[in-house]
Figure 1: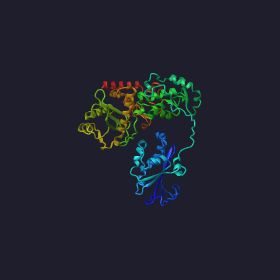
Figure 2: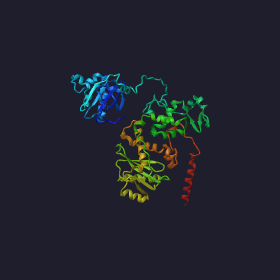
Figure 3: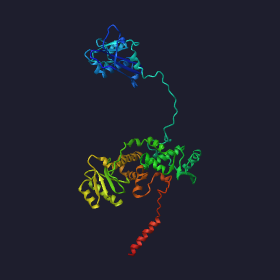
Figure 4: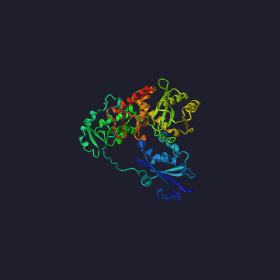
Length: 492
């Protein structure tokens, strides 16, 4: 590549093929008028090309030949704007006649390329015709990426549908009239039809209870039972499960069923859920304020703005435990200090007094009422700095879960946006009873209260009992203990 000289002759050579175009800019330091342009001693300055795409492939030949000329004059004006002008060469005779600056053309000819010819105004150039057999290099560049023959191979692929849900509603399958809730009889029939697949269960603790095959104390669901898997996945993801995502769905299924490559099947199912595509947003990484060790050690509060609903409620006060992620949602019309104080008092009545209360510096939190209430309850108030929402990111992450669950239930049940207050208990139950990986596969209600988490799949199969999760409670022992304490009180 050479550096352009001010005294050299500058040449621009263009060409176009059926699929591509080329632009070559050279210079000749000592121009010999007795020699043709192809025999001059050229020094390369610019060599570029491109491909015609989409509607450009349907252009006429003259427009394809004119395009690189106009493109070069527009993009390489820093080279072509020079006192001596430049020489323009193309192998299309009609184009050389149309772009000639000193030729008077008829109006109907000029109007065809008028919007391109205008771009050449202000440039000093002389256009000349060069035969196609002498325009070798520009012709090579214009055909550089074009294949002479395009071979098409027939490829046989499997369907992307991991389960056959085409017969059901793709948006609300659980509410479809043709949806049948899976039962133990359906599982038993699917296992009987998959005897060959059962023989390949190697290295697993297999057992049979009431005609149902279990593997590691979990009900075995054959991979070939596509319809059964479809219905199980719908129950584990839609409706009361709140479309929570891949990890909660995998955990609730893995606790009850044994399915080969369950994570891959769940991931494909989540990608196919049309309802999730409406409200799933980008991922937000929570950043805790400080390390926590016990439940109810630190509560995080924040107001969440929603659309005005029936009853005058427009906001939610979200209260979240820092360790277990247990949350309570308090609807209100306006975010005020009275609502915040009342919600804190109700939390203390149910679960006890927290040690620390973390919030932003909103006027509904940082005021005399909240300060006096915290002083009476011996609660420490912590406030995040201004414009530092990531310090209170865990409750912000919960807000990102509250909104999608509300949208999912409103869309799935066909309710109006103003009816969101009616779904408040269901949303709170979904958030607190969903198993998450951040809690080692446990739900918030398990970590905070030691009570088992419920699921819609409990109507089909109860979760497998392990030594780690076994909890035996005898109600007779509790009633006997209460009677004993009552007799002791009467005797006093």
